[in-house]
Amino acid sequence: KQEVTQIPAALSVPEGENLVLNCSFTDSAIYNLQWFRQDPGKGLTSLLLIQSSQREQTSGRLNASLDKSSGRSTLYIAASQPGDSATYLCAVTIYTGKLIFGQGTTLQVKP
Amino acid sequence: DAGVIQSPRHEVTEMGQEVTLRCKPISGHDYLFWYRQTMMRGLELLIYFNNNVPIDDSGMPEDRFSAKMPNASFSTLKIQPSEPRDSAVYFCASSLGNEAFFGQGTRLTVV
Image 1 (tube, rainbow over the protein chains, first blue to last red):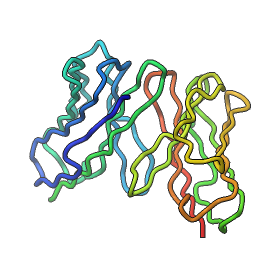
Image 2 (cartoon, helix red, strand yellow):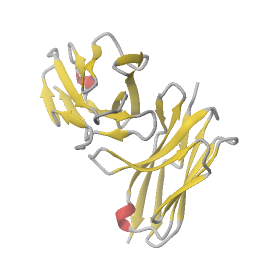
Image 3 (cartoon, rainbow over the protein chains, first blue to last red):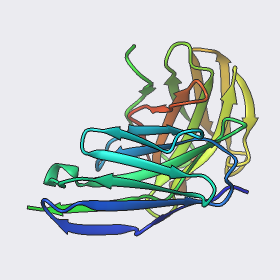
């Protein structure tokens, strides 16, 4: 059974710091991995999608990596800003199409 | 496309009443997911469909919950009878088996 874990559950950093959010999954047989952002009281917004054959994806200050063999993904946020404060969730799609989420990391960037 | 559309955005109902949540997926998407989100349990997958057929409903908490997808552009999640512990935000998402997109959610309060 595929399980997705995100550590830490919460993170507080000063503005300008570079930071890494971690995601691990138990079964390497995934179709893709997706990172989402959720603001309080809002829906989930897709940030980055990494196909199983890819190693990383970049969008602006965000970079996501994928290591299928070790069951790990990281989301790197460069030069963090207060507007980056949100909950970040990773999810894997397995080959049946099922989308399985981690519990999320709540990030606070202090001015 | 307007994205995944859910209605209503907010629903307050009395215990014992029937509640129906609605979702319109992105046109052309062949996967549709229903999730429930609470502070205690995070984001839980309730059921998902592929080409209007339910693939996995193992996350549906009990028989009071049912979901249908009569056509490719509409799905419902019904709770009958509703209970206070069903209070949560219910999200619908759709995909082509690749990048998933979420609706804004329905906040359900059962009093």
